[in-house]
Image (cartoon, rainbow, N blue to C red; front, side):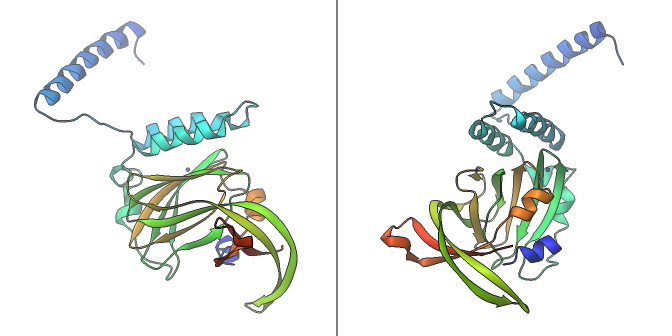
Amino acid sequence: MEHNERREFIKMSALAFAGIALQLNSISAFAQQSNLFQGKSINPGLNWDSFLSKVTKLASEQFEPNWNQKEYIKAVQALLLQCKFPEFENVKKEFVGYTDKNKNWFEHSLLHKEFNFQVSLLQFEKGEYISHHNHPDMCGVINMVTGNALVKNYTLHKELEKTKKQSYNGQTYTLKSCVLEETKKEILTPGNTSILTSTKGNIHSLMPNEFTQLVDVFTPAYNEKNEAASIWYQVNEEINFENNPKLFEAEYALS
């Protein structure tokens, strides 16, 4: 809760097994041919365990010297798009058991978390949203399950030598000014994803237009270090910085 308040401002023998596997393969192939003959498409997708297994393997490579973050993001995107999360027995209860516990704030369910990554379900009522914030030293993929949302991504363009004092909930904060560059603005709909990397589009906001459910994967998972470094921004989107349509002045509270 403290983190949410501060942010306001995922034995048999080898021979016998081989024989059974061959029989199963033959049966499976026959069934697929039969379904195709009847005009039925085959798209089994992934189940929850296989999804986690594949992401676990991919995420374990992030500490390798030649890790390619962009390729990792693409791979996670592809996995997410194969998933029908509301149908997964392991997480179905989080979807069907939804209740609006926090008025004017989204509901967050942590579906899976390990050191290398985490998977979360976020559910919004119309009018609830997440304002501009970053994910320090993290990359992420957002998969829209139901509903839609306006998603905006920004990259820190430069810091400004300008500060001011502001009071909030009985406390006085020092606000620092900076300039953000808008890298993408899109309406995210079911079957589509939004991404951010540690260096591009890492600051984002989400504004659903109706009841919305999304599943995101962030790598690595949240920990004390990246939580402490996270920043929430107040962005002036009404005026462009130095008449550049992609640049906007913003403020954030110094810790």
